[in-house]
Structures are given as structure tokens and as C-alpha cells.
Image 1 (cartoon, rainbow, N blue to C red):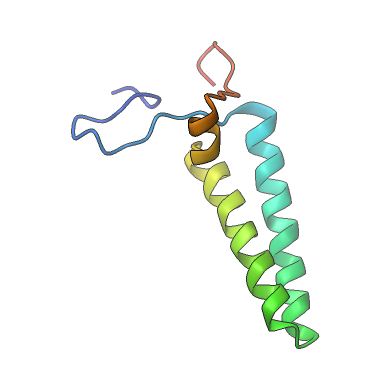
Image 2 (tube, helix red, strand yellow):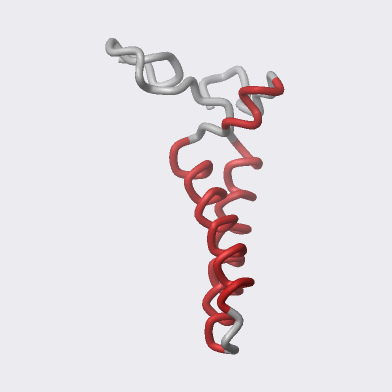
Length: 83
């Protein structure tokens, strides 16, 4: 079972986020999540929603290892040694 190719059903996206990029997205996603919570505390719902969506997207990219924008632009930040 390969982790960076499509599954037998063809539903799994090809991984294109790896290494430092993946870690940076995870850290930035957590930080933006904290900013979103703080914005809610200051009664700034609109800003909290926008920042929260950005945080969710970055955390999704970090966990799954796939970024749709990277795929559209043909960018692959994985290292060739199986990252």
C-alpha cells in the first residue's frame, strides 16, 4: 500500500506537501487558530471566522499532506526519499 499514490478507489489525492512545508503549515495553523479564539474573545466574529477557516485549511494540509493549490500549480514539496 503506497501512501503517495491514489488508492484502489482513486479517491485519495496524491501527497504534495512534505518536510519543512508540512511542519510550517502545522505551526502556522495552530497559531492562527489561537488568533481566531482571541478574536472571538474580543467580539470580532468576522475576523475570527476568516482566520479560523485559514487555520483549518493549513492544519488540513499538514495532517493530510495534500494541498489543492500546490496540485493546481504543479508544486511538490516532498523530498524524493519517501517524505
